[in-house]
Length: 249
Image 1 (cartoon, one colour):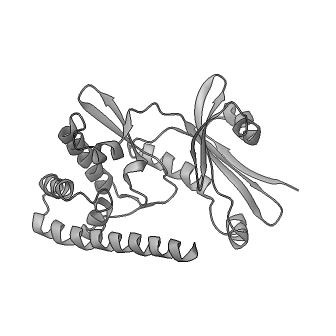
Image 2 (cartoon, rainbow, N blue to C red):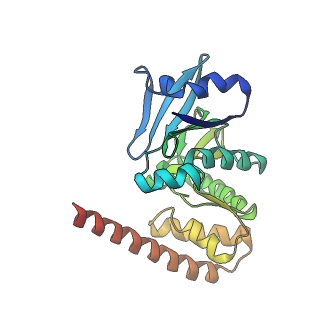
């Protein structure tokens, strides 16, 4: 017997959510991402939505997510609601649904409005000739500082998870992939840990450190020392991760 848990931001989305598998697996959908998780553009009532299907967990986690831990879909929805309450941009959450058996977690989906964005911040960091690059980076660091001031720690704060909309020379930044997030007070370690994952480009990192120091009024030498520590730690983590993948084949 299938057990369903779901929540929508408005009741008129109930039909969409409760029949999400039919909508999601429609052959006419556009697939945006298909690796660990799958993200598709799905139409409902002539409007586009982004639907994320999370990878089905292994057997032990099927029990954990069934009874003891919130699903990634539920966390995505709740965190998105919290972000909007804090006036931080994220695609508008529509709802989530969990499909379970009596004793095991089966699958989950998170639904949000589809965002027509101009580019990811990754495009700016990867292209030294990107138009209006310095202005974009300054506004992005301002945005990052506001996240820290509001106690928002996006654990997956990587360049592919920040979408950008452009309006003349003003830029709006949107957080995605928000299921892993904490809301807490930021100390200097957490601030530098957060910004150390953005790029390995030395000039860009120096720019980020310098500008973050100016707007935060934190001593640049303190930020640099902490930043270098977490940057090297991240590099070591990625190196070990690649080594482990080679061993596993």
